[in-house]
Image 1 (tube, rainbow over the protein chains, first blue to last red):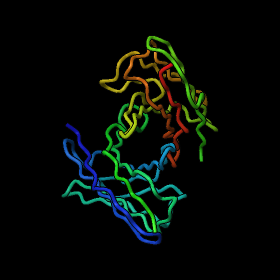
Image 2 (image 1 turned 90 degrees about the vertical axis):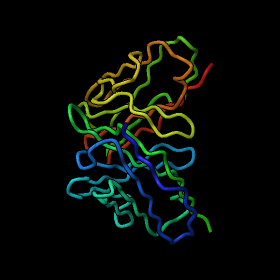
Image 3 (image 1 turned 135 degrees about the horizontal axis):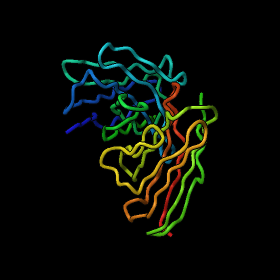
Image 4 (image 1 turned 135 degrees about the vertical axis):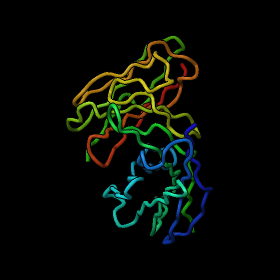
Length: 121
Length: 107
């Protein structure tokens, strides 16, 4: 079955960077884009960006432009999200999710379990 | 960015009730509209895509509708496991924005 398994919780100081990984299994990695979505405590979902798992093209929300980098390692079937210049407002659960495009609107049909990133001095 | 507005923000209902949640987009998104359910401490789960297509494995009591700017999610007969938060998301334009959510609780 399709699985996305994320790396563990992180605690970072303001100004630091964080990397969250997303290891996939159960499907052909290059056929589905990977998106990153975050959720601050008690808040809604916030879309951050995506990567084309085949060719590595990326698209980011302008809100995170310059601070976020999404990459992938095809042989390892893993996607990565790097966020730099962390501030307290970046404290959130970060999710990776697989996107499916066929037969309709792009949708996030499988999700990782989430990774809590806490930014605190 | 396209703004997604959901109503109501919260809703109290009983098992067996029929409920309708709404989602309005700030501009035309066609049928590039998805619905997700999220339970506390869990990742979201896809219910409906393309405004009205039921995701595989999702019960048929979940019914999506609408196009353009106005969308709805109807649950025909609430079950205990349906009490959760529901989010709409547009995928017409990046950023693929979400609504603020509708929190459904047991009356």
